[in-house]
Length: 315
Length: 301
Image 1 (cartoon, rainbow over the protein chains, first blue to last red):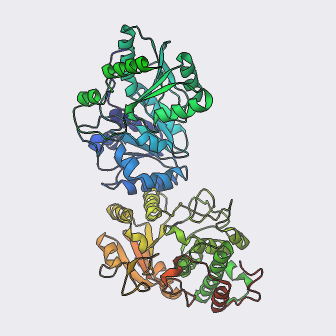
Image 2 (cartoon, rainbow over the protein chains, first blue to last red; image 1 turned 45 degrees about the vertical axis):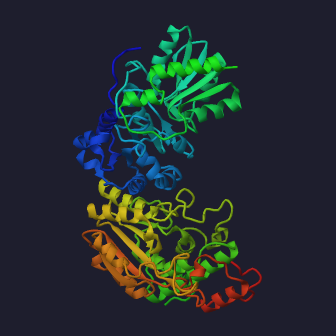
């Protein structure tokens, strides 16, 4: 594990989609007047004629993207996750997911750390909603090295995709040799005491928590699930059976997201005692990232404490 | 005028022939609803004349090649009027008229609301109101981006204009000066239920005191008003340079009558979605110039 910092995934989005568009004339970007935040501005500078400013009107933006996709364009739609998923949900469902059109939805500022915005903008039920829709691929990359490959992978896969993008960078966990593919989850750490299944940038904090736990004599097995849908069932089952006790940890509500997906899978394939950690069925608030991670118990130190509590309470 | 069975095969029917085609479409619509024992009638009947004109005279299409890349696109944004589109598509040769009997049936291509994954000839799925229009704006923008020369037409309902997304799309279409986008607004002045007037049967038109044409005009669209049941007048507008050589998006506000063609349905909001009884069917078919010989058997569709 390196200790380098990942660039913010929003920046990776701007850079990589611009690069891909150099070689792929199908790519266009639609922005909901947030380009300077979501870093769609990087794309606009690279390809001004293929950047479409749709104004502050997300329902229509997603509908327009669907119309463009019928002409074999591949629109990357960029806005905050709360607007792409919550506000524009009907457009996503009826015009993109149901017709299985290749619209790539960039959920910026997904999760708890949305730049001091508060509960209106904190979107941590996006995975639950998006993965419930047939045809939708749902991906939450951990760092810039993985995200870079995620953009290529969803471009290569026909149909709609939703990608969680973060505002800030975090510790980079992959190196240049890492090879992402959409159908496989990745074991980040081998361990025999407890299985921690995590996703997105939260994986970086869970990996750090595993090191804290190791110092306490607890050897955690860590599975990083970047593609939440379709889920790598074999990897989840193997990780669960490796220790016989699973805790899912996500920067997302505990209802219906990664935890829900893992629970559905294990219930059917390998029933395993399980605990859920994430946003505990409440709304968030504004605040500095570090303070939010502490209060909502998603920092490395808090995750280590939560894991310890669950292990101690385990019957 | 050609009055035989082959009127639908005429390449460029005149106004009289178009009226005959629209009459046949109405007969097919009413029969399909009775056969399915469900579906909408008022809106489809207000849209029938315009759909007929569009599919035989305005749209550059190849019915035998529904996915021809250079075709004009048509989006029925008021998707609940799907049976009118299906009737016209079948008469135009997209699929057998016989298939109208499968409307709303299980495994049918003729879904309650148009499904682009089910039926070739549907350029955009629609049904959740306002969304089809939004998709049409995207098709028109995409055509500009790819250098395609076709025109995108969308039929929007007046009740549908309650939806905010319509105005989001209208704003963007003006912002990009989409001269390849034409809205046909089916302004039949009634919705499913709407606003109460003096009494329960007296409904207030949705845009009374807030004119719909003025709204589109205020959003930067060129607005042309026409009688949506006057085949000659509608054709003249649609073929005019005002529409065909526009320098931005055009909204043809077509004044129509909900339930047009069947006297007891006209302007009666309860016929938004209602199945005629056998007696009502007999009256409807008779008024549409096709009295059933045996309304109780075999003639239901």
